[in-house]
Length: 351
Image (cartoon, rainbow, N blue to C red; front, side, top):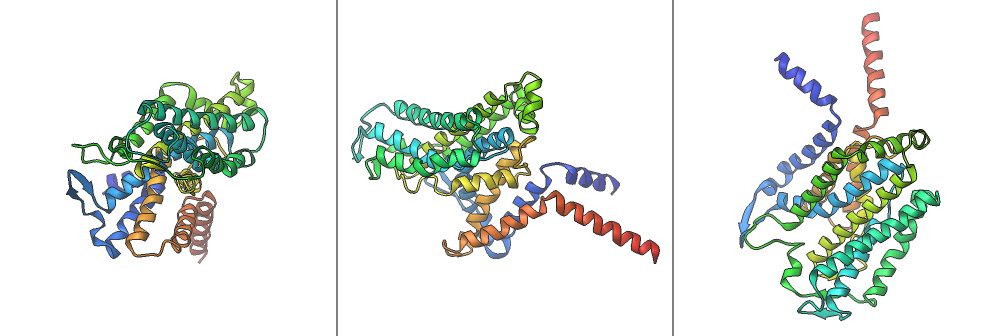
């Protein structure tokens, strides 16, 4: 019994306890209203079910959350342009593959060329944001507001104001599934991005540099770390992640829809970082925490849809639950609880 108590106490002391607890709470709440939430079936060689939909649909957000985590940790700010950058990446890819046409049934240019161009577009957007924040010293919110506002307009210019359709079966596989593999392809893409980022941060000094710059840029500069370069690279990496996420989102609908690809996902990405127990002021970060936060948000959205909540009402319920979850992770709330417990204990002693 003592061993179990000690294990639970240690578990509660870990950084990922609250994010995991919140995710499990959201998932288990479905047992009351939607008993079939955890049922998984196989159709046409592909897994289907609410839980599979959560894992699949969260892939875009997981990729964005990875990039957003580094931006927040290094600069103490956020990148609110990632949704628009997704739209730009999707537009670039579809424009090249369609050869400038609105609808095609065969690639007009090599598929690899379209993918590389989309990723390059994402990186270029990241370079623009990084230059404004790291070199020009503009506040991250203001700097990224430029592409947040103009990004979808750029995508519209690329696609000439119309939705560009790529009606090619192989183009749909990145956002759907590969024949013979039951797990949706976006899950593998998200897993690959997370693993490569984790290895990059753990096997190189980049992770330590990001934390050092986020905690104290001036002190890190005195230690010989180029703070501006680290912040710049974090935004470039965030742009890269947005480009990859844009490719997945575009493949899901086999088209470039500039108005809807990545819409409002920048807010969910920031929330995922916050729900993961990361400080939005910068410094120490948890990549895994952000990933858990992304799945929590998607699980919440899927849960509300499964309960029959109207799409117009979902943001209200979602905001209420997110406020509760963030409050549970608040250090100030923990202090208040400790003070209350102390006062209560002292009162009993006096009595």
